[in-house]
Image (cartoon, rainbow over the protein chains, first blue to last red):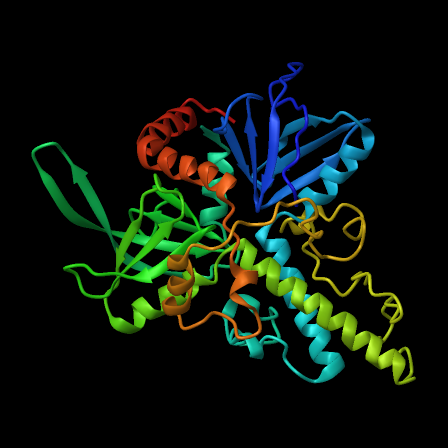
Length: 132
Length: 267
């Protein structure tokens, strides 16, 4: 997805800091608005994206569920876009999608779609209990 | 640069799928005005998705380093060591990682795994499969076969390419955390990544990258053209090289700080 900007507040309660936020693969980088280099990043694996009140969403992580990184967007639409994009932004999500599609295609066509890519035997693409 | 290092370390050591793991020796460069030295440090490497973590020991609780495998090439390299390969980035200022395996087969397995580890590669494959599934559905519908042919209770509508993957999906939803399946499906249904609408067209490829991609593992994917695979992400590589530098320089400090916080009973 295209890099997107939004005002946000990092996890310090009641403090709003304006940041430029960029989603790049499974990382969320944030910048002070004028700078080229990020001041921080969040790895988006094993995290939960939650829509909070209007214009606001939060990210929290598996091992520390009570700690929320809250982000306030300019509009509710932007907020929804962010939530949708972030939910799909993990490698684990992609992996599950791939396994799902592979399985569906195989059921419908009888053929393994990964064979043409030469990656059908890779362990990372196997359905959990069904394959060795 | 800040990073959610605790979550990163947790992800690195938890039981989420590991795509490859093993011992490798990593070249350590020492650059001084009067003295150059090269030595190798034996570390435990773990590949999860597009992240290559490395640990001092196999049992270490947190990694000492992390390489984000986006916008990089993996190539065999000329070195005094046998079975050496390198991870190199487009960003001119970014360091290369030279790694040495214990044997030919191990080296080849790593090069293969690392070459296909990027998020972008996965995304491409997923998009391809998504299209294939659409086409399979359409041709089934066109053949006037029973619309419920293989559904067995699924809510899939063959005429609708935007598939809903409800109960079929494994219970892990939302970025890999199963107990947080927030009341049902991922909102919006189809597990596809949105089109990179708005992403600027990548600049033409430097010749070096093409040949590197071709030679590294012998052409990653016959079905995918080189143009599809190339995704320079040059504005973003600055972010990743920053991550790499951060890890290289500050990890010892951060570990110490974290351990002190743990001792003080920080939650």
